Length: 463
Ligand code: NDP
Image 1 (cartoon, rainbow, N blue to C red):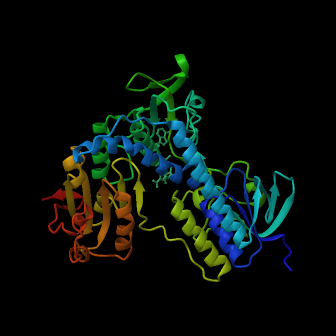
Image 2 (tube, rainbow, N blue to C red):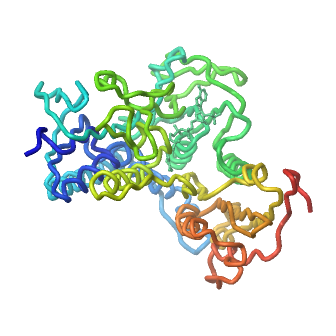
Image 3 (tube, protein in one colour):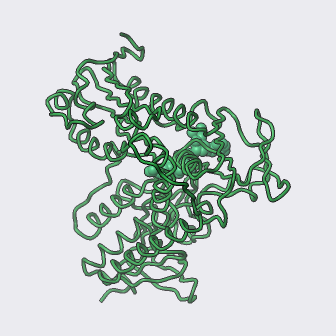
């Protein structure tokens, strides 16, 4: 009989924690999992899932507008924010239930409590005050939006956590940041009819993406009516008349809006977790330091997902969880593979991307071939919308491997998923060329760009 209460104790009921707990329990291990808020974690409760639902909601304004070009007359339309929030709540509650059901069916013990480390193999459950022991402890507590304490008036601002459940839809909003969350929410709020301004400190939004997509999305968002202020910062936020917020900016004066939303990155949830009691080390950003097998500095304690700040994406946390199970419970040491992760920004138009940006590839390889198409999507011909779609393949000229694929436009995320397989399989441009097109689609451009648009030699663009 084990000397511990549990074989595995999981702290955190998000994507990584639930997957680990469920799989370990299904293998017959004695597992408990503790969650202090709601099962499903950021992704299900206040991240990916509700975000995507709100993206769908926000697209209807364009759909109604486009319909006329196809012969439809759409009557007067009206949007009800409270109805959307309630529908979203119903759906995430359903998913939360499924997460718990999966755990219960596998035989895991589900605890609704905050849990903190009190020693190397010991956890205290705050709801009951009870202390339990486990052979292995897995920390998968995720992160939270940076509150940006250094900003005077930050307490008057909201983050993505609050944005989903605002009691009223604001008439105007100022969103700070130029990353995934800022860009996605700017498009959502704009689509729902909110006067939207984005303020970003850098030269161009989405700093880690290919320049073409960054510029293309910026132009498309401005064309829709989203105001984008680059190379500027909010210096302070104060309360104005009628509940408004006044944001003092460095270059664009005072901006009065109903809400200011901060989307300035996410911080690992390591505060107050008792890490020091167990000898778990964190880095300067507060993230738990782990090795290639998600092992922390303390024997028997593991961490994965956003709390380790490797790549803050749901599928990555799930993958890390499956590797943890392989390594610890299936005698098959497997370290997570963080190379070539396809990703999407659910902006409008969407971004889908996998592999290196042209800029990154130009630093790494002597010669590149760049295949690029910019065109009006078919739907826009009748709708009259000024949409442009951009598709780009970055090819290492030496071996013809496609090292980056980038798309701006409808369904770019769906396409990125499939391109992810091609890049992971190390396909060459020749493989793309001998693939038959699916017609008429936008994606067919990916296999019909036969001549390079331009080449890059030693970092310089040549004809
Ligand atoms: P990101 O890291 O994507 O972006 C943070 C933004 O805030 C950047 O533009 C950054 O600027 C800016 N910033 C950071 N600190 C400051 C500061 N002190 N003052 C001014 N600007 C600042 O974080 P998000 O919060 O948007 O998202 C968090 C993570 O969640 C993402 O990294 C992503 O992994 C994940 N996510 C994924 C989604 C998806 O897959 N579709 C959707 C939403 C989130 P700079 O670029 O100059 O550093």
